Image: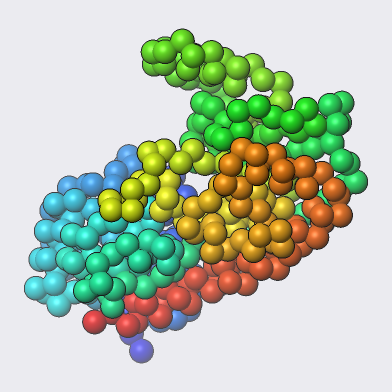
Length: 355
């Protein structure tokens, strides 16, 4: 049987993909091939771009004989126009969305794949039948903690928390002051070149107009309890493996208005959480819908609604036996449900059912 040719229109270049491109597209290629699909990249930008001009790729798509086109995160007038043109040629189109609500793209395509049940729920009832859920699949599940240590944390021998982010944070969300027995590594988009990093610090400081914000930033930069680590695909797992606790504090601003489209912080996927949990880390996280659906409070993790709850949960995790128990439960609860294999199965089921 001739493989079904599926083309992917990407927001980032496959040689240097953003995390969502790697996780939700490139990691699935081997599974697609095994299931009689022929996945190819139909378009990728030189520089990351979620709203590209794709008018010029229509002829290429037709000439290549693609049966399905998957728009990963890309949107905008040009993309909607292309989806409508492809529909007239009988080519099925799918919109993959991970962190926003885009009704025009959902209406223009044959199907939408959302990254969480919560994100799916935000679309109008009349198009719910077109939307399915495929979570971000876990990577490198063979790397995980096998030792949790017996340390309770002290000023001279602090416990070590890790925060993984796609940003270069200029402050520590939620946690204004840290317990004396805790240090934190932020693994994020920081340069590994000293001169470049100093330039970044300078420009960030210069953009802050209020003195109290500058003071807060300087306190963050010079804190001996906070380390900023350059993200890389290998080092991030080593940083998590060496940590005692995983944390995901999130500034919940702007405040969510139930009568309006939710702010970006509220529609994030589970990936940062399930990644840490799959490592066997006991995790404390701020309350966002995708996290709340994964965590069973005090069993496989903790949701902290306030600074006081953050401190309370951190104190709970000073107990080595609690860290072990919660960490093992965390890994068991996510390792199969959020595996790449399982998400690939859901993805393939979704594209096979496109009408």
